[in-house]
Image (cartoon, rainbow, N blue to C red; front, side, top):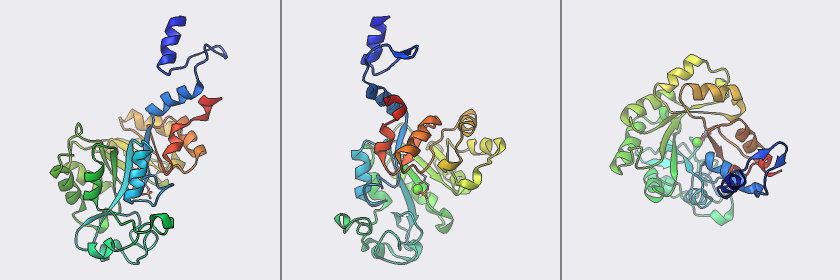
Length: 283
Ligand code: G3P
Ligand code: CA
């Protein structure tokens, strides 16, 4: 028994007999075990540390060992896929206007870093192609189609970019496509049947029915809700229909811990370091 426990200890697995620790396994070894089971998604890159949806934030997510970087894809007036969250450039750049009204050349001249911190002055709005080429093989990419109803043909353009790089085969790359626009996801799944897709669900989906979950599961592999509507029962129901659940968006250690306790499959966080720590296992 002692030898068996020692082997488990070497593997970083702790077992408690009655209320006393069976051996002196460093408790942070247990949390490392737990972290390996929780998918760590850097929301808009490690956006708590660097300006969201910039190469700096994506690189930071990779440096912090996130399993995925999450990106928001939209389209310029002249058809270039760019990464930015809002449908206007107003909040996160020094420009103004709708993404879909601006040419790529105009968007590319904007400063997407100074609003966050002067250290990031000169960061550009990245293209989808740049991020695929820079980060493929280095991290997973959780691709959100943001407001695809504004950009007819965006699903096809995303599909072409992935197929050109042979990134549409599940064995080749960790790619997931998700959107709040569920019709867009149905269309994208038809274009890219081997790529996992996700349904995003805002607070209005708090009372999602079993029938709705089953319908989502017919084309999606993930049900990714606002974290405020996640309950243990919802997690179970999502799993029962064969999907996984990555709630968004954790912005504090307490929120990440709460999601750990709900047994979700992944945590979408601005701070990847929060997904590497769970205090219940550090007492
Ligand atoms: O990954 C889900 C999350 O990104 C959705 O919310 O508004 O940050 O794009 P939002
Ligand atoms: Ca997003």
